[in-house]
Length: 74
Image 1 (tube, rainbow, N blue to C red):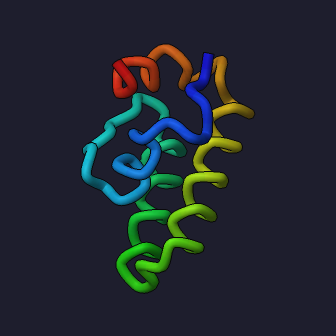
Image 2 (cartoon, rainbow, N blue to C red; image 1 turned 120 degrees about the vertical axis):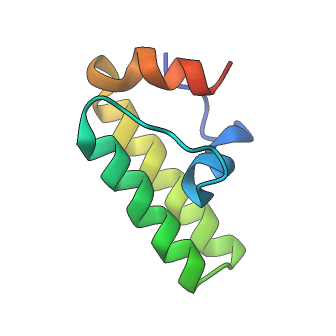
């Protein structure tokens, strides 16, 4: 199960504070893109947008990333 969008570790993932390395590269690219966007715009709105996008992505591909993602949210 993908953690709630309100879970505090989402912010750390999209900011790059947690260095996630997924076996399927698209997840790494998705988080890298959010990280780059947040380096250019550190507003709360951009952070919320990135968290929403990451949550949507990982929810859509839960079958691919669910087990690995659970390790980062322990």
